[in-house]
Amino acid sequence: MSKQQTHVNSWYAASVPKFPDQPSLEGNEIADVCILGAGITGLSTAIECAEAGLKVIVLESQRIGWGASGRSGGQAIFGFGCDQHKISSMIGIEDSRKLFDFSLEGLRIIHERCGKYAIDCDWRAGHAHVAIKPRHITELKHWQTDLDNNFSYNTTWWNELQLKEQLASDRYIGGLYDDKSGHLHPLKYTQGLARAALSLGVKIFEDSEVSSLQRGSKAIFKTRHGQVQCDYAVLAGNAYVHGIAPELDNKIMPVGTYIGASEPLGEHVARALIKNDMAIADINWALDYFRLSADHRILFGGRASYSTLPPPNLRGVMSSRMTRVFPQLKNLKFDYIWGGYVDISVNRAPHWGRLGANVYFAQGFSGHGIAATGLAGRVISEAICGQASRLDVFEKIKHLPFPGGRMFRTPMLVAAMAWYKLRDAMF
Figure: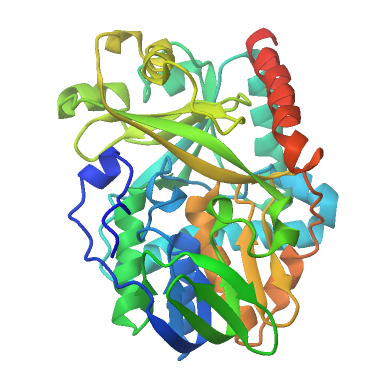
């Protein structure tokens, strides 16, 4: 395959053995199912379809896990990219309850896959959404009440003192803790899924960018040097694909997000910072999220860019944000800083469905994809195999295009985000 298709210079890529290169597509192939994208969505779909006895091909323009699946914050959290009460307002409480229960299945799928296919992805249990100011406490407690009363989902409220027993930071004044969510090494997990798919007979072609999708009773994906004819096509490229199904492009927007991996702290220092090894995220609009790595680094994320341009002085900004949380780490250096795109929808809800009779898609994970992507693969596979009832529920969510068209949607969103960041700072 082409040698320029390497992973970004991240701690994730540096901390795993090189995955064997897969061939580029050359010539013509025929499959029951062909999937665009070898991230968690695409590979999960491939595994489900292959387990059902279907012949599956996956086309990846770069490397397995090259996009968000191999670069993300690695936090696996219940629910979706928007609060559940917002989904309830869009489709009603009964269907919202179904989707929430499906999201918990997404977490279980991670454990099922890791057990069945012996995937070591550094899973650690526990996640806390934390409050910086009093209005955050109000929002989190309302969220907890909604989860408890309407979805029978129990979380634990920690006041400031209880939170500090686990997290050595004075920045936060309370937190909502969930012991069923957690965090993992996303590239390890994605590569583990790829090994599982290959063991089931799935063909994965890397360096095979799709140039077009011809729709019809048989769908045809065309690449530079070949094509795949299939009964069912699946679009799982998310923020890294456009132009293949134009009617989907304006329903999501790529947003840059950035992560730093510190130099190693040593186990004693690391455990003093986060005693129970949980993942943490605040609830500002421009949020910070962080956790420990298996080799005792701080993995610190945030500083989203809605302009698609990397922020200036990214290393300095990331260091400043980290030391605002942990002043005791003011002299700590980042060994790695990297970024990538997540795909957000206007309402931050998942956008999954089908185009015609045999083209399926999943996008709009809105920064909440580690667990939801595995669920998407299962739901789409079920639909391909004739059981579309769960996909039907997701399709009830109405998705509007981003305003402004291709020319103006980015500056309009940047202006909106400036307001939300001001709100974070002032209120």
